[in-house]
Amino acid sequence: MSSKFDVVVIGGGPAGYVAAIRAAQNGLSTACIDAWLTPEGKPSLGGTCLNAGCIPSKALLESSELLHRARHEFTAHGIRLAGVELDLQAMQARKAAIVAQLCAGIQGLFKANGVTALAGHGHLLPGNKVRFTPADGEPRLLEAGNVVLATGSTPTALPSLPFDGERIVDSAGALAFDAVPRRLGVIGAGVIGLELGSVWRRLGAEVVVLEAMDRFLFMADGQIAKEAERQFRRQGLDIHLGAKVQSGERTAGGVRLRYEDRQGSHDIEVDKVVVAVGRRPWTEGLLDPLAGVTVDARGFIEVDAHCRTTAAGVWAIGDVVRGPMLAHKGSEEGVMVADLIAGRYGHMNYGIIPSVIYTTPEIAWVGRTEEELGQAGITYKSGTFNFAASGRAKAMDQAAGLVKVLADAGSDELLGVHVCGPMAGELIAEAVVAMEFQGTAEDLQRTIHAHPTLAEAVHEAALSVDRRAIHAINR
Ligand code: FAD
Ligand code: AMP
Image (cartoon, rainbow, N blue to C red; front, side, top):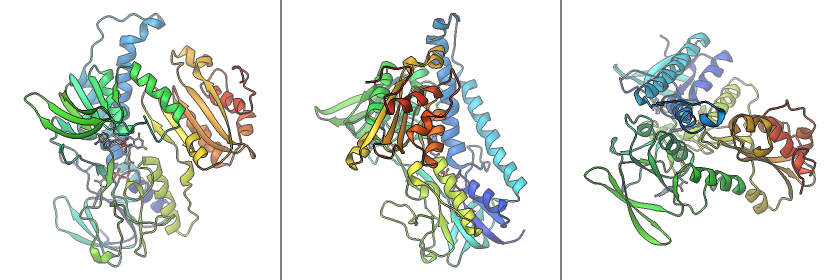
């Protein structure tokens, strides 16, 4: 096998594998080095996203939601089920099968596109050379025209509560529990904490969520966050805001957590705890100090707007660089970089990256929140529509929540769209396209939406921007 490539990508997650495929599509000889090993010690492409992130979490969210609905919501549809039982082993096996299929799928895509997959560790040397160390072999030197660093991120630990892989776990551990904890502590009410807390709550655990910030989902639009918090509390998630976890210790049967809030210091006991306080970029063992790649104070590889690092011919994408830690952000950076390397046009619109939280209610948004617009002094118009008035949402028995559309008061250009309710992650795609085309609220108003669909709620919210909603009283 050749040791010379036009492009060597280090990291086979959604940033790296997409960059590799696009580079190969562009006619460049490409290799992708990835170090991920399954618990059985087998190489598995797809990075955190496929192996221990987006995909397994969505599999368990879907399964646990079905169980919850079978237990609590089917009777409203006139369906009576007796003896509904959880088979957690089967649920976990289904999750594992989905992950295995999708990871193998990337292997297939590499083959079809002519990308050389190299299982092992990559280390960047000066002069665009890469030392590749296979899991079970001697290191080899690769020469590359361009190198793309896509080594992702790893969970942040709390120093006073180190992971033990059993009772004090990270997100990967919480995706793999083989029994439902009686009482689960979740530290951090971010996307990952809420998704994992929801899974185990629906499967029967008591779930206590401790969040340091005073405001729930501080990154989301305030009105949307409020509605979501109300619904989560109704589901029995015991959410404590302004609660900063200070320390924890293992007890005879679980973990005692100490947190501080405005009232003082509190101790709670849980069987297990998921630490979901964020993720940090992963560059361990990646960079030769003479390679010329700079890392910032928080550990992110420094890049410009086109993901060029400080070393010529070396690029970095995905979670290991600034910006939201989202799979689709990394993938799009991968496309941009592979196109730029091939001498094509490449661009990222960082202002229009959708965010989705796959809980019930599902929460999704793109663009700016009312709070951000207010702080920036931008005058805007706001329109909302409640799913309570959506025929489709009613038929689905999921008529809680709302859509909010924010548009510039002068130009009518869309500035933000926020959804809290059924299929929010799917509904937001329409808003992303509209905003990518610099669309206006009127563009959405004049677009025909099929009836009865959830998308009509987006249409009505856009109409409501100008107080012209048909199925709501305009105030
Ligand atoms: P990664 O996916 O982390 O991939 C990096 C790869 O590089 C890994 O395989 C790693 O082993 C490999 N690697 C590292 N160093 C080296 C080296 N030196 N040599 C060779 N290989 C190396 N995002 C979403 O958009 N939607 C979601 O629904 C979502 N859900 C999530 C749920 C959970 C529980 C978690 C933890 C994350 C979730 N994310 C989600 C975030 C998403 O997983 C990440 O943003 C995404 O995986 C980042 O992609 P990446 O390619 O930059 O890095
Ligand atoms: P995210 O970065 O979206 O995954 O969210 C992580 C969340 O964890 C943030 O909302 C933080 O405020 C929260 N967090 C961080 N440290 C602590 C802590 N010690 N106790 C409670 N919450 C924390």
